[in-house]
Amino acid sequence: MSQRFFSTKNSGEFVGVKEAVLRSLPADNGLYMPERIEALSDDFWAHWREMSLPEIGVHVARGIFKDSIPSEELEKIVHESANFPAPLVSLGEREHVLELYHGPSLAFKDFGARFMARLMAWLTRDDVGRLTVLVATSGDTGGAVASAFHEVPGTRVVILYPKGKVSDLQEKQLTSLGGNISALEIDGSFDDCQRLVKSAFLKRDMSEELNLTSANSINISRLVPQSFYYFEAAKHLPEGARASFVVPSGNFGNLTAGLLAERLGLKVAHFIAATNRNDVVPEYLREGVYQPRPSVATISNAMDVGAPSNFARMEQLFGGRWESMKERISGFSYDDEMTRATIRRIRRERGYILEPHGAVAWLAAEDWREKHPEDHCIVLETAHPSKFLSVMEEELGKGEVEIPARLACLAELEKVATPMPADEACFHEWLQNLG
Image 1 (tube, rainbow, N blue to C red):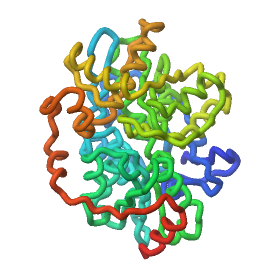
Image 2: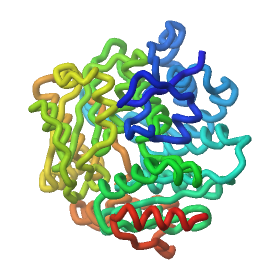
Image 3: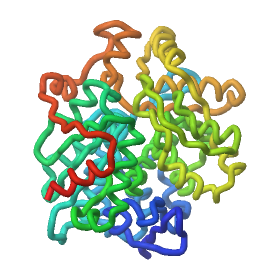
Image 4: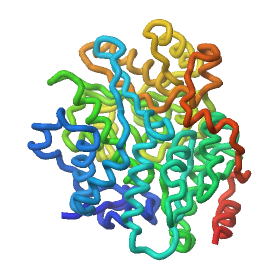
């Protein structure tokens, strides 16, 4: 049976996988969700701990997409996209770090971007015309998408990023590839970039004319491969262990992927949403009031989001019930001073280098374990420390963080980006001129 997808704003109308993935955003400005999510089979659970990450991924992806994608094609997509490790590193008793930065762009977004590129190529295999991929980034998404789609035939990618709010090496990942990759340097915040992307999809004539699709986590296919590594991490824990996942959170796609993993049957003790000063969701979990607001800049820039898109999916998964959500998710937030101190302390005490996002999550794990010492806390470390070199050198000194060759080589490349105000009319005009 094929999977159907509905909008978080209208559960009574359904589309197929091609519409959900390639159109990304429903016309009503909701987000697509799968109609049916059932626990994986008993046969899977009998053998999952012996499976490789790609083998787990095939089962997880089939659990979401059902028969919408032929088995042979799905296996090829998963094995080609999740072809790098996600090691679980233990720093103490029941204290673990899940390293998600071993892919081509050194960030967890590689899982989603590589999967999407291959899935979209299969979905458009018989189409005429070019696919235009729009993506807003607060740092890592753009680099992963640029890497995954660079020189892919029949595609062009437009990356919107906030001026002055991504690190130098992150910016080079977005702006130096050329070819079918274009970068727009938006004079505003990530929320402005996200708003511009959504506005283009809501202009249905233009969206259809340019064959627009999104590589942001508003696209349901971005979240599916991010569910893989929750299973991968949990399989290494002792049988019966209580696993609490600590997720550094901005747009909340990564945490939503964990919720999907739980719906597929993964046993999770708790989810901990760790944020910087942009604490809209932790505030909601404490007080029951969801109040988006303009984001503020921090050293953990990928989490500088004041209106997280995936909150709509989180609400849908919990039936709009605040009490149900706060039973499964707890929120913590920390400022830059605390983040910096944690980077220094963990390097000194554990000999491990956390980058600014992982440091925020480590703080949340420590706070959680004070009252739940029996839990195995798994901190998601989402990017390589070298992507935030200026901050890391300020805290640890020069030479402490090794820069992988595939990132170091970007330093001398030319930045090519088009400056643009955070104005919908200007953005739409620029898109129309793509032809």
